[in-house]
Image (tube, rainbow, N blue to C red; front, side, top):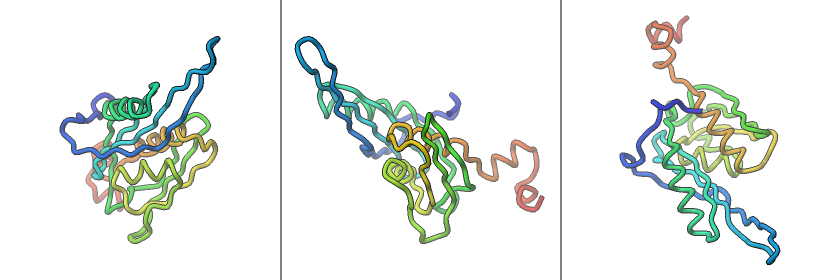
Length: 171
């Protein structure tokens, strides 16, 4: 997904967290069922830095805290252009597929549950998003991160090709 040099230190950012999914899971033993919790959390600063994490524990609050700690270790930077994304992009993880498209000013975040949390935490105000395939929150979050990590802005493209930004737009 993201390269090592793309990582951002969590201590430098003012991060907000959002619980995407909390799942109660049971392990059957000879003494009966043992319940534990799995939490999926997204953290972000609202300025293009986001991360996701998974935490598992016997207690709800402990699993959420573990997920937040995990999310802070997986931070990536997303290019945002005028409150939306630079271009359309497909993302895929497992059976979860997502399509994100830039939207004009005033559109808002048009996205379903797990995707909405990720996009709002990134600070994107106008976007069209569609989840295709699996509706499993774990896979949808990871597919959304895949799509967002593939985004490139004009400056990056110009630098990669070794040309000016004007040439990127005018050919």
